Length: 117
Image 1 (cartoon, rainbow, N blue to C red):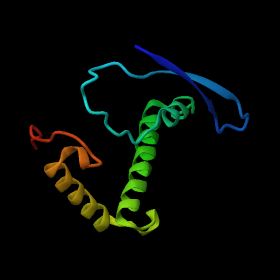
Image 2: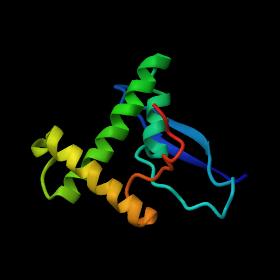
Image 3: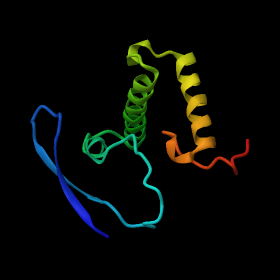
Image 4: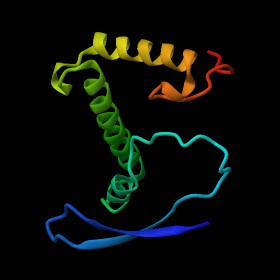
């Protein structure tokens, strides 16, 4: 499994540089590559932040949500500040239709055929 080393500039007052080793690649090469809304660099910064486990989870969730909101805003032709619950729900419905017609064209890609509430 190949690895790559990234050097991350922390946002701490000390300005220290930290090297984070992450694994990339591996797995089934035939699978379609899926989009991630949390980059390895962002995940690395969260890991070195000194936050608790729960705080790191919420931090990763918040960063990935921000990155998805950037995509939503761009596709809706507005700024993030102009987004509201209605626009976000509309975008999710549009993306769902894309996924049903051509799974590769959707931003969010998952198989919800077995999902039950």
